[in-house]
Length: 241
Length: 49
Length: 219
Image 1: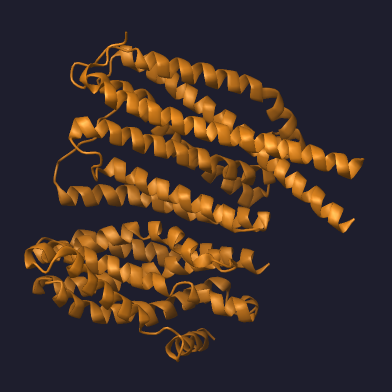
Image 2: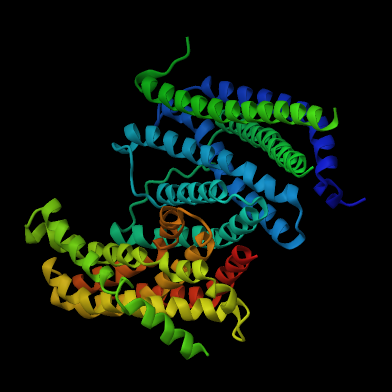
């Protein structure tokens, strides 16, 4: 029995229906737990209460990138092995990824306002995330623009492939560009470094929570897409029949 | 009471925006799924019945 | 066969209604509008000149992208091209080349003149031409990819811009950097090499993605 068995929509529906409640419970527990625990952490001597934002900012940023990678993998699986569930999973993941990118950008802006004195800095990291958000928007727009589902899956898959290369390229181009503008000025707050256990454990929990939350949303949204596809097939048969 | 210091507004705004966005995507996912399920049930009832 | 296709595309683009020269006119308007928005002050125009010229070239290039495949798709010649002896990747490359000759090349010729309008320093002008020469082929090729993806769509124009513009970011960054360094007397070699690298990579790989998208839209 191989993993490809679950590429069958019926098997996928059965399996995802069975594990979905557990994932939802885990996602709610870990996300709420991590975020509330993070909210209750003591003040940082340098950043004051703003350090609490890290428990939203970092998990959201992590998921924003990971969801794109997941979309790349599922797009490749669709393009190579033609498993419909894979293409639908990529479609289902994109809006979640866009929201995660938006959360990372919004919390970053709100955090940056008191720390850097401005809502927005053309810092390499921030700029890359803005570009990533543009890629998400383009990908979602392309999905909704094409009527034929298989063509849509193919074209968005190719776009995801090319987009991944250019998102990565932009990441390094932006690094070059910013250093060209103001040398040596690094505003990014390196997460994970010099972070005490008080902040680290709630952060881990929050990251796990966001991961499970994404998984739950991914399962729900993929199930929605499969149902819509089946509905369309039934309606087509009725019209023909 | 939780101590927030002078950055209370900042922290609350960040949490507020994030919770709103997350609630939005969760609501959208669940609502769309419920609608798809209902539509499919109705259609299956019509096709088979 | 390749030459015949190139000649045909050039003829289609340059004859009446082909939109030839529109890109340059758009570029001129853009360069004329900026001083109205920013103010006529040389001190204000000079530092933003390279950026305006590159962004202008990019937007002007965008204007004619949807025409790369749209007409051929409508009248069915695309199906003939798909079954032609040259591979579809080659067709894409030739069409991107035709787009570059009709849209990119006029921009490059016009750019030094428009640079004068924006008080671009004389030392930067050769670098402006060089960076555009090296960078704009990538714009045409990426545009052909975007056009291939959106060719079957009724309202593909806006979507095309949304898909293609993020892909232009690396080229824009390095292209502007070349001109800026040229204007400030720095060393433009490094960004120039990056720019050339991107263009080379794009020309080598993107035709395959564009041809794949075209095949999907043709079935």
